[in-house]
Length: 263
Image 1 (spheres, rainbow, N blue to C red):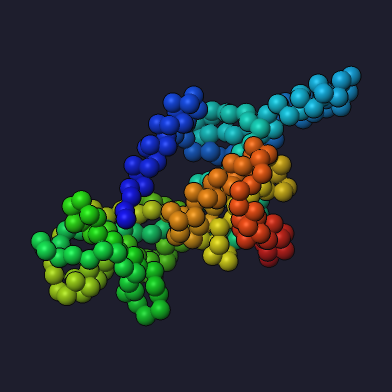
Image 2: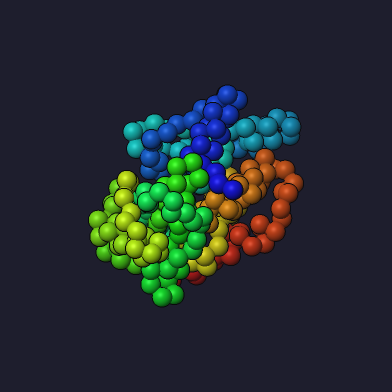
């Protein structure tokens, strides 16, 4: 089966907006800092006559301030870092050291009528195993990505506007070879940013040194498979609910990377 990631994203966006959630897009976050109001509220809570009032005051107060590039600020109790290869500089040094933004280049191409293939893992170079191909059912267009080893810096950046022509040319050539000499017509080429973790596994859960901040990053090219269950896991943690998949804590906890990993 096939699905459209963009379509899923739009559907989710419409659903949360219908439920009254404010969504701010095209706004780069440049800083996440401690909220003074949270510290003050917690200080006041200690001196409060009623323990119940003290607990409520501290729990309801914003703990963090998220600041955008345009100067906008959002005070919040919880922050979830879920932009994968973007925004790594907002994380503690121990986590920055084990995450690598990685740019992948993709082409969309038309093949001669009657040429058909589903999806396949394919390698342009021996043992690289980094290429991936699928053919859209609705129009037969082939989506083919990879050849990251040919990029000037092996794709180790987060610049999704950097489309390299020689990579497009090589992908086009490999398509012809894969489909036994057919001439592919490239109709689009673009880049997307992945995030590779040091051990090639996602990093999901609370950041222990930043109470109220959580991670869902490092999917290493497999986000469409793992992000749904991991996203649910983080949401359950934020809500203080019983997690439905405790194995995620065992496998993907940020705590597996100690401070010494920055060396």
